[in-house]
Length: 457
Image 1 (tube, helix red, strand yellow):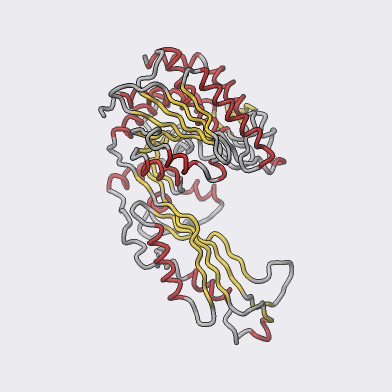
Image 2: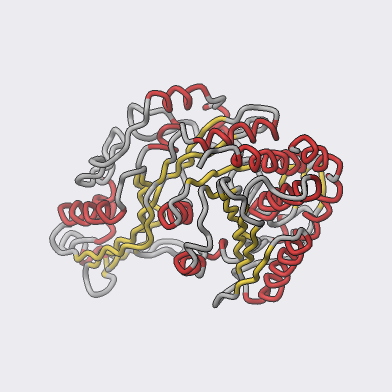
C-alpha cells in the first residue's frame, strides 16, 4: 500500500499545507503567560485533528501546558513507534526584524515563514500527515504508532519527565521518532545517531568584603578578577585539551568507520569560516572540525562578570568575579564525575586570599546509537524513499536531554530525523521551513512506518 499512500500525499499537498498554515497561525508561546490561552488553543487544534483521523486521543493536563497523547490500534508482532514533538514555540521578539508578522504565515520562494515553521510544528506535522495518508488509503497502519506532543519544550519540558516516569507502560515502544533537527545541508538528508551531553557550572570567586580603590589597595590584596582569568585560562591547554583530572578517562573514541564517513561529508571549511565571520578555526589538536564539534568533549566559558561595567573608567579592585562555563560531553562521560574533577582542578588553581564556590547546574550524558541498528537502517531506507537520496549519518554537538530520558526509561532507540535546514532560523526572526522538505518529510515518514513494521521483534 505504500505507493498508494505516497500518491495520496502528493495529491493532497495543498490540503496538508493548509493545515500547516492553520496551526502556524496560533501563537502558542509557552514562555509568556499572556499566550496561555493560545497554547491551549494549539493543543485543542492538534487533539481535534487527531480525533478526526480516528486515533484514540487524550488531552492530558499538567501543572503547566497540556500534553497531547494519541495512538493507533496495536498490530500483533510488529514493533511500536512513539513520535515525540512539541506544539509550543519560542517568543517571536524582536518583532521589528521580521519581514512579515510571525503568526501570519507567508510563503516566499517555496518556504513558509512563521514562528514554529521548522521548530517544531512543521516537522512534527509531517508524521501526523503520514498517518492520515496511511489511514485514507490502507485504512490502517502497518504497526502501532503512538504520538506524544507536548506544549512546554521551549521552556524546559518541566512536566514531561514526571509524565514519562508515571506512564512507562503506556508509552512502551521499540523506537522513538523525533523530528526537531536539520538535514546536513540542502539536498543532503541526514540521520542523527549521536548527541553530546552537557555539564553546566557557575564559578564564584570572592575576595575583599567590598570593591576597593585599585590605586590604594592594588598590589596588596588578591584580585578575584585576575584570579578568575588565570584559573579559567589554565583549564584548557595549548593543544585544546581540557586539563580537568580524569576528563578523558571514559571518552569513547570514534571508530575508523565514523572518521571515514565524517571525512567524506561535503563540508566546506572555508564557507564555514565565512559564515561565522572568523579567519581561523580552533579546537583540540589531532581532530577535524566536524569531529571536534560532534564527537569530542569541550570546555567553554559562557559568561564573565566582575568589577565596573559602565561607561568610561572606574579604577576598582572588584570584590567578586563570576564565570559561567559548560562542558560538552561525549558518550560514557559522567556529568557528576566531570563536576568532581572540575572542583578539584579549580581548588588546585585557587590563589591565597580568594574564596571559591562552584555551583553545579544542569547536566546530561551524551548518547550514541549503533550504526548497524535495524531501526537506523530502516529509517535510512525510508528517508531515501522520501528525499530521493540516501541519508548521511551524523552526530550533533548540542544536547537534547529528553533523548537520554527516552532511551533510559523506555529502553528504546531514538531516531533523530530532521527535515529542516541549518539556516531555518529557529528561535530567531524570519523562521522558515521549505514546503518541499515538509512534503518530502511526510513521504519519508510514511515510508518509515512500512520499513519499521518489517523488523522482526
